[in-house]
Length: 309
Ligand SMILES: Nc1ncnc2c1ncn2[C@@H]1O[C@H](COP(=O)(O)OP(=O)(O)OP(=O)(O)O)[C@@H](O)[C@H]1O
Image 1 (spheres, helix red, strand yellow):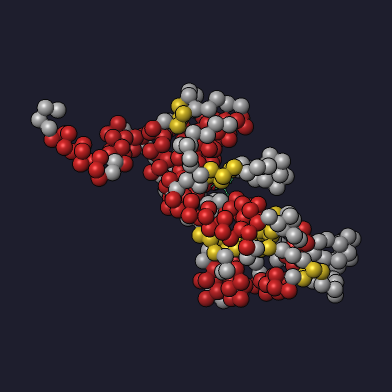
Image 2: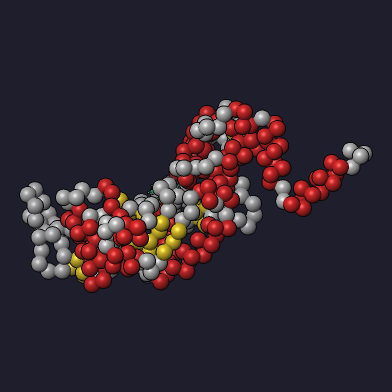
């Protein structure tokens, strides 16, 4: 796969992405914008400490990918186990998290280790931790602090060694203030805080991510790698990306499927609200002018003012 990133750009490639059964689609973390590079430095600092981590970011920004990176860089030998708290059934959440003994419920003939037990020695990633029932939040904190879990239907605690990485798209401090989130759990998580900015707040990542997804999907679908045309680049850069990187990924996947020649044009992106008038030659020139720095603009103005031009 060819990536058209400028030499020296910080692209973090995962060593065994193909072999890992838990690997999600990405084979690399594309972090080019200065804000992302700063975040990457924070990840490098936090990962080996073993501290709990709370990643805050909008949906689709790459929180799970970041959590996997923290696990990879932590050197912990156990598994990375990802759980979406919003998808846990309120009735079975405790047994799913902490496990249960055989016969604890009608139909539960075998015992189960639960997500906590599966992550023993590794990392438990709790996505949307704010959706965890309040009663369970206290039990979660107790399990993390005492390093023991009490499986449903047992009296004997089981020792566990789990590093927690949690994610939230809402501000948990506000949830605490509203009485919806356990204050002590919030303080426990606050030791390692990471803010993953929305894609529109790190515009330097947009084109490298687009190139990266083009490479990934072209290779996967066995298609020739098209160029991302200049007008398409501007369209990508000016869009607000409410769905963040996940949306960019599906836009590029779609563009690759519908582009008939070797260049991706704005129409192929099918961006909401991106009508044809946005991409007239004049608007493209305007975009290019806007990209010039003050020195270049002054130089251009001086040139245009010359009577011989
Ligand atoms: N920096 C990045 N480099 C490469 N791929 C990325 C990057 N950030 C996100 N992606 C890709 O974007 C998609 C969404 O990422 P991910 O699932 O980690 O987001 P999320 O914030 O956890 O989403 P949600 O809040 O909905 O669970 C994934 O396919 C992921 O591989």
